[in-house]
Image (tube, rainbow, N blue to C red; front, side, top):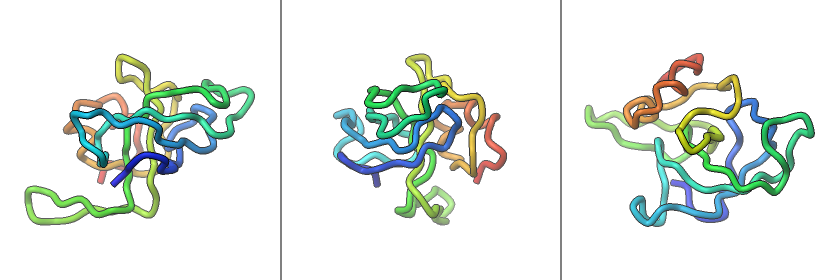
Length: 121
């Protein structure tokens, strides 16, 4: 569960160090989960990266510490809260995806991000 002011670890090489959630769509509700897009602000950025410090970006949530139930009765949970910086078309702004991502991301229609990831859990 990701809510306002949650800190996300970037799961890509866009140059961001930390991402702080500043907006969640009303269609989602107050808490975002795997496969949801949230509005974040970049806290600390690499000078040569694709994003700048204090820039507002759209982020796709790919990992959460809170377990998420699946249709088959199993649960999936990760060690951190992580997201991928995306553009308005839903394509990643970085060129690599680091670490595993959840299957819910691919089911939400982000096939490009799922194909760049090393492992889809």
